[in-house]
Length: 226
Image (cartoon, rainbow, N blue to C red; front, side, top):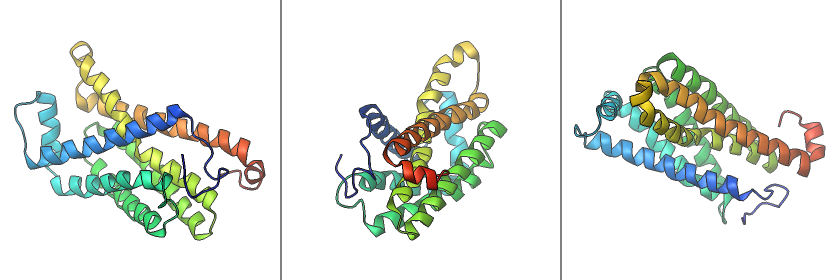
């Protein structure tokens, strides 16, 4: 993994995490593309559950597009933040901050009509707030010219946002078992959100804490909340 940062700033990432990271990016992009197609060309031939979900998003299509298009651009820029010669580019960081802010605030608006009811709404409030908090912390460290903490907090924000990709396999399990459990999307969407976003948040936090203690003990002592 080659970047413009030093090895202390970007310690080696385990292969399993890199694979999971790339899978999340692919799933997130596929979700956006599928939603855009569904909005542009509604289909009534699919399973009733999917048709009902498509109808929910179509009922506020403008807000949906205002949320998912910036999210897609954000995800497309994420690899540049970690790989290649653009890692230090100011335009890239400002683009991520701007797009992230749009995604975060439109997520609040989207959650007011959550498919999964109050459980999904609570998950969005919790993780979206943490996403925006991480984004702001990263921006503040960027302004302070502290690339290590700027990068760590941006990584937290990125992985939380990619939690939406992790929810998809979880939802797939619920859909596949619905003939047995008789659970409908409005009953399991919120649970899937909590599971998917929690997995991403916990994994990245454990990894960051482990790397911080191993590679930067002095900073951990002076910045215990980093």
